[in-house]
Image (cartoon, rainbow, N blue to C red; front, side, top):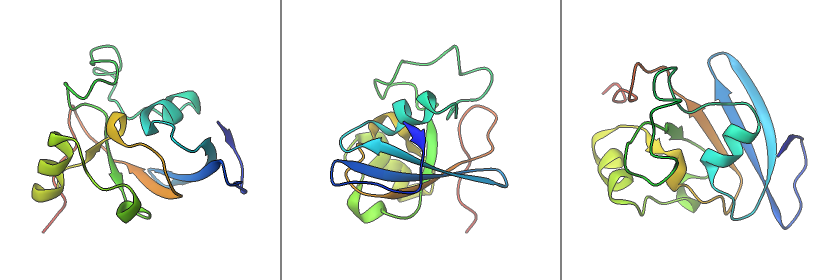
Amino acid sequence: MTPDDTATDDTVTVTVRDGDDETTLTAPTGAILRDVLLDAGFSPYTRYTASLNCGGRGLCATCGVRVHDGAGEHPPDHWHDRLAARFGYPRLACQVVLTDDVAVEIPDKRVWGGREPE
């Protein structure tokens, strides 16, 4: 996973918004968003949960990100993500399989990401 502006048929473009910074990555189609972020030096975790997490099994709910563009191509299918979408919380990066180009935001959080303002 490298910063890049182009993608081929077997890759997807992941635009990462982290605070005021925006970076474009290229990842293999079918990759897990959490792994792509970590490989590129972005952490969906807080400083505490970087060491205390479930390792991508969808159990701890600490790798929350906001999926913006491409969300229709990445519908929530994990039980936590369905609830998160319903109540406005971030989705789990470990449960997003990259099938199309997507933009994600790493929210500012203490442990878990907060709700979207209504």
